[in-house]
Length: 207
Image (cartoon, rainbow, N blue to C red; front, side, top):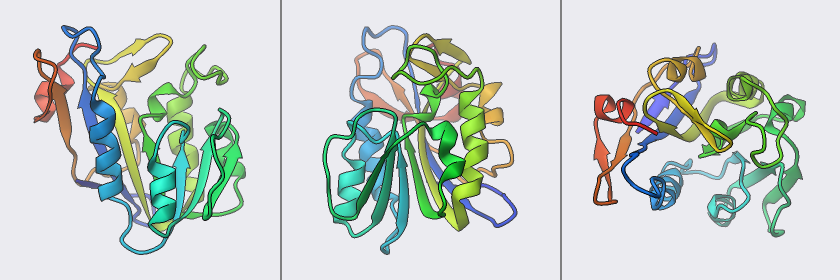
């Protein structure tokens, strides 16, 4: 489930894709369990410097710190706690390039799709906020940095004010200059259960 992207230093990117079903009243219900467990599984095996973006409400920062990683956790919302090995910073990911350090791993768990959308988490409005952020991340990555990213995929669309859905058009833009090594897709069945599906099925679902 790893994805590598070819920046000049050969960095590595990992992601999981989740697709949406219009037929269900709460299409995202249950997806967090899939995302969080997948992210934790793909953390570096050795103690590393990790950047967790959009971390409020997620257990990933805390779990990563307890596993021995040194975590910089960034969110535009108020942080909920203090913890050893965790450096919380309240700021916008668009300002990520001002960080004076580089990381071994970066976590983007269900957050890149929100960046720049008006009225979502109180962030500033940027039409291409997600693309700007992905480009800026390169400035804080070590040579073999691992990115673990989860996003909603399906037919290209925006569900205001919540999130973007990445399809055949915008998905390549999000990973411009990134080389995909592997990927995983999940679809939600009419019965309400998430199951692994193939790329074609995922990219043809409605948001």
